[in-house]
Image (cartoon, rainbow, N blue to C red; front, side, top):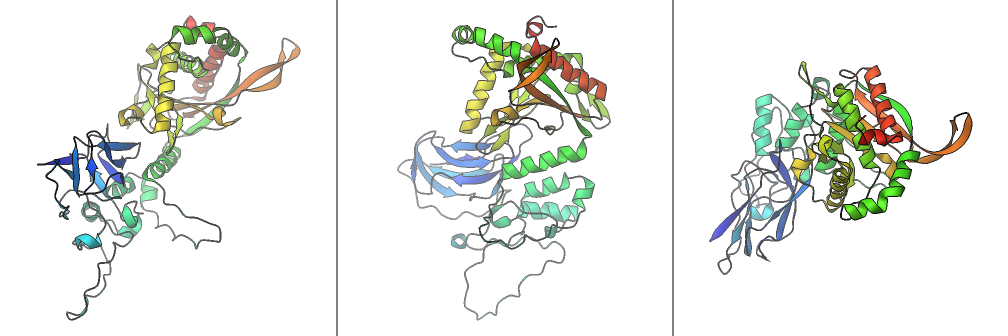
Length: 425
């Protein structure tokens, strides 16, 4: 008896994924819960495990194919009943590139003036089917392009062999009008000696597009300040061991100081915790704090939900768990959405100052930086103090300059005098 292996639910607002890599081949034996295939979404990479023991049968979605939630990926044959895998017709809502061993897929309907090679003479020798041409749309993408009146030269394809997927069309349609009507990009220049071209992953391409969209769609501005870390460092040094012992190995870092300081500042200046939806401003009476962390596939921003209800230990425990799972690629999709404000710490990489880009649709992001000793004038005397530059990037459509500056001053006051954070001042 065969069991269908399907695309699982991928999380909020995620309906499609790309088959990144098959970990098993058709005909191989697999154990229950053994990873079979990796799916790449625009947020994370998800492993699909075997629902039970058996033999992997026919694979319906090759590497590079775009698949929708609920679509069949492959068949799992029960132990002792596996048969040789047979080609299956591509009848699902997704498509793959033509496979010479499986015959030629019917071509998509022509979109506009697309030229096709003349048919060979009837008595000509049969030639092996050619791989799908770059920019050739997959069937689901072709249907949508025909409905929207789009040509294949207007966009790049991210599917296998450069084919245009449904996700590429949706992403193209979501661009601002000026970008959507712009001329097709110039073909890549000839490679020079010593250069290497690597196709952007779906995650990296989406990150690039969203960062650019944030710049295009928001009136983004950045204000700066600096914070004296003397008191926070002294408090951490004094209570670090006791804190770790009391909270079962949870380490006391500086992120909890900044999260608590930002929560207090967001309560005082709610516009920084809001977002624009059409012609309305949506104010949030809660704080879901996004914490930017580096993973193997790029920067991701898991969300610490209800951060305003957490103490130092809860914050440090959550951030530590995010960091470990980001390195292992084990973050869940629903953990990467729903944030209302973001903190990013370039200081862990040595950054002294930067201007962070908004994590749309949020209206504020705080940038932390490297702690560096500098001479400071303290009560008429020059003292060496551990200083950190802070940067707040904000959407000027919602947040006024006075609010932004006052917000950053409130964060500075909370970190420089941690007693204010404990007393909710």
